[in-house]
Length: 72
Image (tube, rainbow, N blue to C red; front, side, top):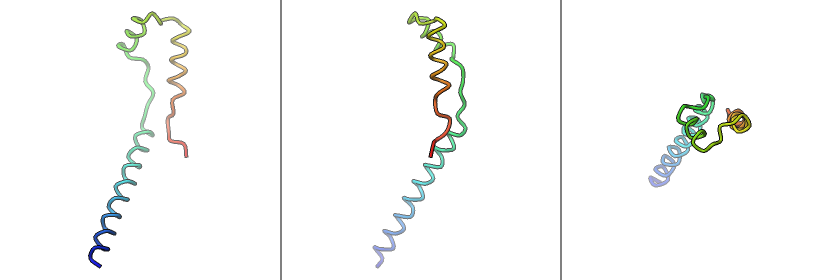
């Protein structure tokens, strides 16, 4: 009988922790903001020889299409 109560308590704590972690992840997705490329990212692009309008447009489109929220 005692083992069943302890097992139930462990299960409740585990499920509560799992739900709390999901809530924290969803909150971080909601607060996510898109930022423009940083100077170091631009240096990498320049160093690779990819600094032209077409490539920058592709990168900008990729960034704009990143998910902002979890779809349910």
